[in-house]
Amino acid sequence: MAVLNNDEKNLTLEICFIKMSEDIYEKTRDDYETWIPFILCLTLPDKKYNIEEDIRATLSVYEIRNLIKGIEKILENLGKGNKNIYEFCSIEFFFRMTMEVLPEDEVVEVELWINVANQTNGKLYGYEEGVRFGSDKEDIVSFLTELKKEFEDVNCTLEEKSFR
Image (cartoon, rainbow, N blue to C red; front, side):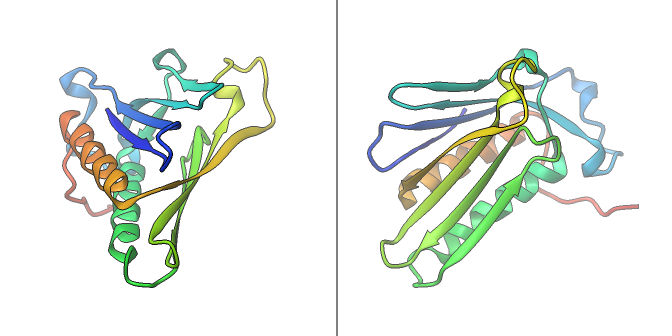
């Protein structure tokens, strides 16, 4: 499970890709046509947000590769005095995340918004709830490493396929 903590270590974001049967990832399909199930958990000191397995949330292989490359770019700019912003939003609007390098502090500000309907099986809908927090290079590197490992564990590679 890929885990990202804030600087104060009182907030945790977890993303886990779910391995399905061997035939779920067809190597002949384009990345945007191949979907990987995931769970997401955001734990705050007084609240917990979950996108559980029963929600059947998925990200395309294209989205996951985009997320990984975006975080890599953020890390490349950390410590160089450059301001850099990466924005990710899942195609199905399960969550969106923005990472911004704050050059003056050499920290990454993370903003995460989770669609409420995905947490409540549609009982509540029409808005998102979110948080903004700072995370240091060590935590971002660890999160990225685990995210890549999770991705490879579901029979995917970081190698891109060309679109037809």
